[in-house]
Image (tube, rainbow over all chains, first blue to last red; front, side, top):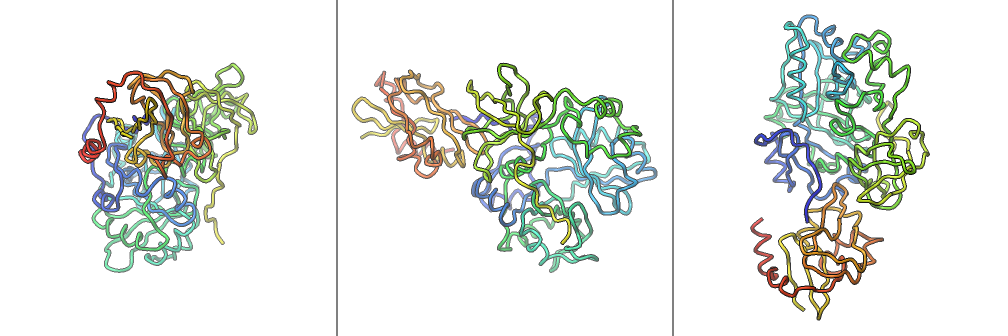
Length: 382
Length: 123
């Protein structure tokens, strides 16, 4: 028995421990290397954890991700020079999706940008955070200070019962229920837990839920408090991946890389409207051209017949012609069928197009499918 | 009926000149939820230590190696409709395939139950 799987090893450096390392092990997690950390891949099993999150609420430790705080004179204009974001329309407390692009418009990372009182709060991918910090330091003026909030942990509470579970424990100037999807605010935990936490209504599962930035020295106490709620179980990276795949959400390093443009990847919402005409960000020439002329290939969803999943790297065919490559794929626990995301030639990208995917020499029937595969259930207000 | 184990976590039951092959309970626990099992063709010659089957879990694909050399004589038809049998009954109903035994000597180098148990405890 041997595993084909390739984890996201960053480099051959010693693995670091998350602030919740001992907590995960005490909960029975199986730990694996991911993004330079030992991380929990699963506790009781991926399918059980996946279904629990879709039906109840799951607590994810995403403390491997990079939390950055950017302050200083001119930070707003400086940030617009490195990201295709329109900060003039970004209200205080609201996270917005953006992209770190290279000079050719290739994707270096995807990230969330939130306006805080004294600057901006960025959440970047764990495997890329050191490169991101170096890139930002190189391209931002000296007046802008980049603070790596490595004394903070990050939790995500996701699922239809996430609100009920979290509401019992937090108080803020605005009630938790006032946060709709992609809004954030400062809260404190009730009881003896000291200090402010930052909570946004956002996530990576397609479900309603929250991301919670907390000081690392109280994260175990907070994780215990949340997990003591009957709706909540800890959920590992395995289910995080199957949940985001069903939600049609791309994973950096797999679905987009420096070799792909955000327009090919269908991430046009990451290029804010004003910037699509004004430009003035890295790779703007290519991106504005692609917006007008289209791209030769597109990122699409695929539904496969049968039960055999197609994984990253599987080739996609239209008849005898190879027209694409799978970038993420697996078995959807919700649909009970294999699903995948792939770049395919734009002529074959329309929903309903019949294609084939090759797995170990076998051609599997596949159909281009709209995404998300499982509908999003974000809370946009009652 | 003697049962042998490999260090790749396959088990082999030998009855007369036919060997039945599957993966161990430890192996299924490591793989997690199994969604598909790709079995060899009946009539295929498989060689000890070479690929014989592939197990797909939600997360990943894993190879299962031939524990001994021989010809595949039968595959478990139940796994097509219910691959999760490998999780629920790995060492009985979730067997993978039956095969001939080309070289009895290959069996001698495998572990018995006690040796395998000690091997797993040492992992």
